[in-house]
Amino acid sequence: MPRPTDPAAASDPAEARGTAADASADDTAESRPTVRPRLGRDVVVLGVIAFFVMVGFGVVVPVLPVYAQSFGVDHVLVGAVLSAFALMRLVASPFVGRLLDLAGERVVLSVGIGIVALSSALAGLATDYPQLLLMRGLGGIGSAMFTISAMTLLLASTPPTRRARAVGFYQGGFLVGGMAGPAIGGVLSTISLTAPFFFYAATLAVAGLIGVVLLKPVPRGAAAEKAEPPTPLRDVLADVRFRAACIANFAQGWSSLGVRSALVPVLVVEVLRGPTAWTGVLFAVAAVAQTVALAPASRFVDTVGRRPAVIGSFAVAAVSLAAVPFASHVVVLGALLAVYGVATAFMGTAPAALVGDAAGARGGRPVAIFSMCSDVGAIAGPLVAGLLVDVASFPVAFGVAALLLAAASLAAVRIPREPRPALA
Image (cartoon, rainbow, N blue to C red; front, side, top):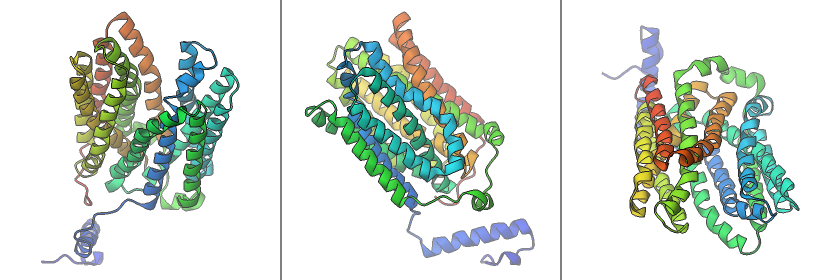
């Protein structure tokens, strides 16, 4: 017997709501039986922006330590240039959420990209080390504005049933840009050490222009309140989904941005006795594995659920990372990093989707807190891991990172089981 299409035909209000939803779903299925829902325009635009941002960033990162050394400073000060960017991202993040409430995501995103572009160009014109350090710190502030506003806009412009796929597409822009950037940077560095900085400024200018022209304005004020009232921050902080996402992002920042990036190059040279070129190949293998896995991982998160994605991926990442220092050959190490890369495809999408689920469409401050968790892990991870290598061993350093990943997997067990989404 066919369902009534009029909610009033149902005697119970709850049944009426369910009947209407079922009828709508049936109508949609009949009219578009083979068409999958597409990502919104803002998601595509943000993915393109991410590509241009990461191409420029990938151009600058390989040459930055050499450029800093050209000012005659020691290795500690070279490291300070690298840390200044991440440190200022962390310092600025608490204020970005308030800026989003005042000015809106599109404005903050464009201004943030503009700040990074200007700081990059001025870094290329630096005449001494303090100027370079100052410009890198300024760039970190702009980066916090861009990344938090972009993720807030991404989550706000996507329904929950496609949220992970939107995050996956956005991260795909970063990954593809990140793989292309170093190759371009190698060519530009043969021209001069400053050329990559001006190239970075140019790609950022393109990204900012795309954002200003193509991103839709987000309703503010009374219109936004009527469309969807903001979830109080205290409620978001009390939500087990948000807490699990923050623990996961901290563990990922510590292990991926910190320990893996900091220790694998040293492990290759000191333990495997291989050339430094192996590191680039190994990281490229991991990046390709992550890129290939992004689409199926994102669909898994949206259709099967955030909870199993977090539990499984962080457990796999913990095992693979713990095994890294015991790799006896570069091929084994490459295989382990590839497995870790596949896991990070889930680790990057599921926690972000959880934040969107907990915070709703107007989650600027929750997204800022979520981002800060990764920054803290990325800053502390290399320092603690380096200390553990000095006083203990590589297995201990990687083991601590693996324990944090395992803790994130266990924290996700408390996330309520989600009903299977109606729209896959």
